[in-house]
Image 1: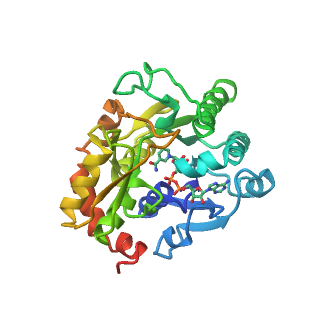
Image 2 (image 1 turned 135 degrees about the vertical axis):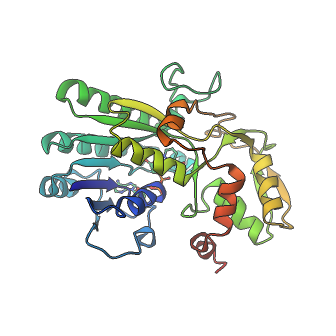
Length: 316
Ligand SMILES: NC(=O)c1ccc[n+]([C@@H]2O[C@H](COP(=O)([O-])OP(=O)(O)OC[C@H]3O[C@@H](n4cnc5c(N)ncnc54)[C@H](O)[C@@H]3O)[C@@H](O)[C@H]2O)c1
């Protein structure tokens, strides 16, 4: 039996991992989330004996300690964090408090003999890139905003706990992940919702900022292969699609796929935090995933035909 903790398991990526973990009889999953941006509706629909939910704040030692001490987990996925460009810019002190959560999780993992901690870092640790694609070992880290600094500190904590206490880790540097559970705070879901309702699609600046978009199944399958195949132990891995697309192209593709009459409206550019370019070197990910990544067009089609997504935007 694998006893697995997922913090932030009522969020997008966490809930998608839980869905897959509980399909296997050997896994028992405890989902911990404070529901700050997560939702109970993202918890598994199947009521079986393989999971439970506990509402708790991982940044508060008094709340997370009894959970970890009593369950004695084998593996921990630490995905809880304040996320979203606007939210993290407006609440920098709250973002920095996530360092407490990282330390709580690592201390408690060390003291309860957890076999490996999987930490959700971010492409943001690279900052504004000088060269593309961004490589795990050779691209310098250039974290400036608090969100990126916290992820960078978290990576350093993981490596240091391994060095001093032999606590195993895997660092996932997630690039933009989208999927049916994504809220309209994020660009793909926001554009799709607008297009499906034939409302204007708004873009900050000229829309020439490039992005890569990773379908959630690719993200989750890579994470789980790292667990099941015992890969990337004490290593860092970029998890992201490397197919480049400008924000303007994304809006145009979405309008065409949804056969929408939406118009594209340009707003003034954001002052900070809207990187102009980002693209992972995902050679490690491709090897671990062992299948082609989902193309942007196919991923968007999956969202358009997802009743979960359509009901979340009030269209079903
Ligand atoms: N989705 C992406 O594209 C992306 C990109 C880079 C990094 N990440 C990282 O991946 C992780 C998951 O992101 P997501 O997109 O699923 O975001 P999300 O907001 O959907 O999930 C985060 C979850 O953590 C919970 N949470 C936040 N603070 C908490 C706390 N102190 N205690 C307990 N629960 C708390 C929230 O309620 C939410 O359910 C985050 O750490 C994020 O920084 C995501």
